[in-house]
Image 1 (cartoon, protein in one colour):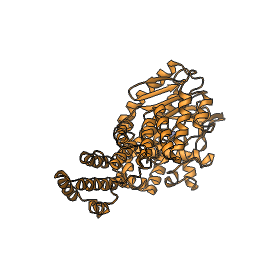
Image 2 (cartoon, protein in one colour):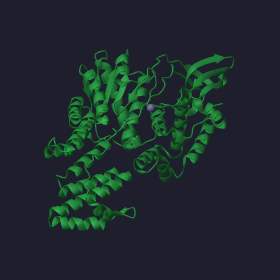
Image 3 (cartoon, helix red, strand yellow):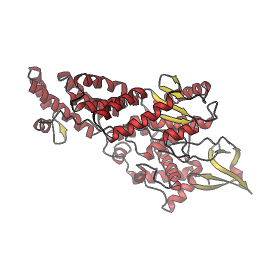
Image 4 (cartoon, protein in one colour):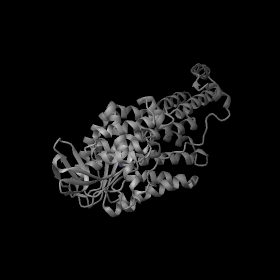
Length: 468
Ligand SMILES: [Zn+2]
């Protein structure tokens, strides 16, 4: 997901200390006029302390962290044991007594008893996945594997869940075991290579990812793999000549036109941002996050992003840095924004809606709605603001002006949530989104409101923020 690049931003500092980041700031008579994402605004010059001009022109950016689209392996441990599955999960609950009973039989031996137990744990795990509880599902797979360590279906489904949780290195363990058990000629071999490719891709090991997906394509052509392979090959050939840098939480790659000083500065800023987001969102991404610095042209070539894109986050953070030699304030905003997307994507298992992704990312980078509050309220009065339900999916199809409105409205909604209950409400909401059937369900569980309530709360919040 991409955001329109904003023109150079100026900061209007009001006498009451409030700061308005805006573009095209002009003075006429006794008014200051400026552009906000939601339209043109005008305020009396008497309330303005000063205007800080910023001509860097670095675009603010957007993105969405993506968990790879993993279609779970076709090997089904419950095949032939449908009765076991039905006895394990019934009346919308797991029958733990039944599982314990099967475990008793499995302990006293017998291959069939073990297969039945595997089928039972598999059914329980599938049920938990459908409820969004990946962690509990992983526990069931691990318990089942302690009885049936060579069950291919269990190994593949377990690794797919690790991938969903961005635990790429951990996912490799069951996959390597599965590889040892499975000759190339058997049906599971292509799935093993496909999932192993995702694990390496997530762990920023492009060479190995390309190797695995090439193998998967040879064993069993699959459009999902073909697309992923094409992308990984582009990354691999571009990054071959890149230098590398690494910190505890980041693996950075950059080409010759970026200076080592800039790379160091970016890593330093990202580590600071990481610590801040870790405590604010109460979450720690389990693996190093990949960051790639590009010159403008290679950025466009690699990401296939439209020319107005600032930076993108497709699981790896990709940033154009042409001409920069140090971390400018604008670049610092972009880094925090993109890193926030990585945290949200992983914490919500890729299920956070776009409005929440972009609202929180803008909030964390330091944007506030005060500059656009008046214009947003006007738009709301005219019925021109989108519903949050409309802003759940991709924004790429939105026409230019609606995209600006979408960003502004999402930020305001997130600010209103944080004002009412603190950032911890965002953290809880993300946890629930990972598990709930829908965002609105998660909203009801955590904040006890639906989209209409939140829309109203946002308007009330903006009335307080309106500087007019
Ligand atoms: Zn964004």
